[in-house]
Image 1 (cartoon, rainbow, N blue to C red):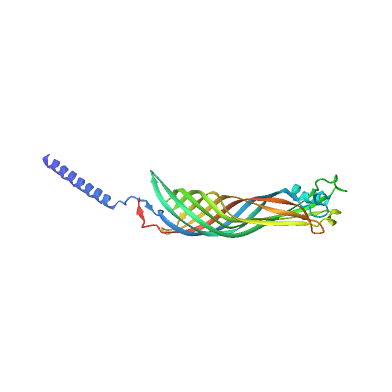
Image 2: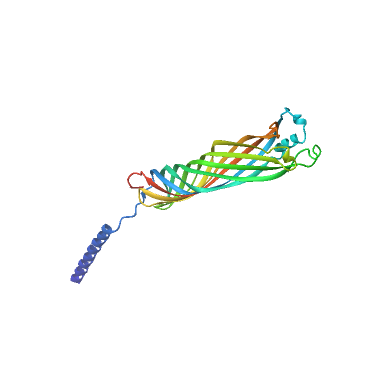
Length: 309
């Protein structure tokens, strides 16, 4: 009986030692847990290219100017003066211009990786500058009655009028904040918003011609004006960025910008066949610029060594 008990005890001790050795061996060979690393914190520079389009609100209205009383009775001479004043009463156009073209430029920024619980966020700031040159025009025509006719005129005269309105953006840039969440170690989904600025030009040209038979009495008259201005507004957008390696990433992004308005005045003059000015009017031009951008970009990051966080 004692011999059997001794053999059992020895067997138990042997099995226990084998189990302990196997457990120790398993602990040593078990793979270490995956430690997330920071590939996002740091500065970067890059290039972008894409497509830009906008629908600008553009229009003009006119206001009556003073009469010139020199020659042929001046303001008291119908119907020449009546047609002159038509430029003020009826020279009004309101429409829109569509713009679209290739757009390209460069960007630079800085990112910070922030970990909150199980989520990883990327906060940053980015500036970009786009080079572009587009000019788009629309011509609008209408026929307007002459004020005061036929009360002051032998017949109901009308004027044919035309306005060519043009707008152009030469350069465009933004300064924006970015905030996004990592959908994986290499994929950032983000929103962005901030300041947009641009160099833009708006111009207009006007013509008015007295319809027959008055066209034989009064020459066509025309005027043109242009203004260039630096515009400032806001922009918002969203995008996705993929890390190809610690240094390189690519992104797809959409931005919408409201750049504000350009306003200016253009003098419109009416002349007789003798070349005498009988009256004038001032046309007010206003253009509101909007911009949409869809683009792809590539960035190179100057982030430090890959470290766990």
